[in-house]
Image (cartoon, rainbow, N blue to C red; front, side, top):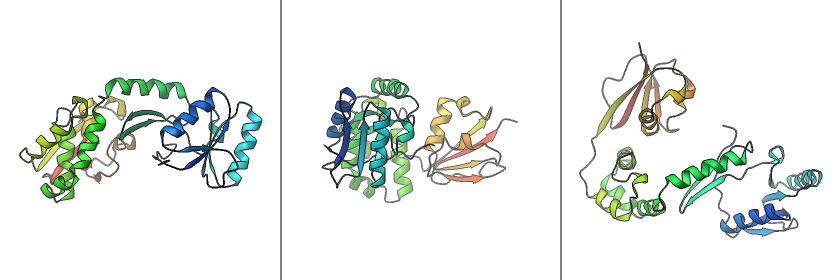
Length: 256
């Protein structure tokens, strides 16, 4: 991973914006859309800066001045000068999907954004807000954090009652809370055909993304394991688990 993705709150915060022309105007709209205030270089409260200056030498000089003040800099189309990059954004407020390439190709990021825009329903933001509104009822029904997480995972899984691509909304969330409890545990098996993560089927990739814990043969490559949730428990093991703990357990081995 070349960068740590971070969603930064800009509401009522100043952001230095340098430059003129269409690129600068686009960055101004982006800052204002996020609730920030574009300001000049002499603002001593700003901690972020976006440089959209056409001349390479002027952009480099401005970057050096601002960084000397401890300000984090983004320089349009100049990855080497950037402390942070601005991703392509899919906005389903309060859901935000940021697509970054580390400055390698803004065109590729845009193309991927358009794919997500076509895929994700407009109601996705309403689903997110509805889930936020029922935090207390969810905690009351599933006091144990791991059970609560698994219930949410099952509901949001493809084909689940809250499948994000199904157009689920607040009414669907209310119905979900009234449904019988999910199965307490489940175990699935993935037998790898190769060490290439692109050879995983769509179902296998989803299982990796859902698993609460992963038992795996010691020689399973990191490229495969990195497709799992970052907080999933991992247990190197020569043999599959004997029984499933509450939640979703995955056994990751190889074809004989």
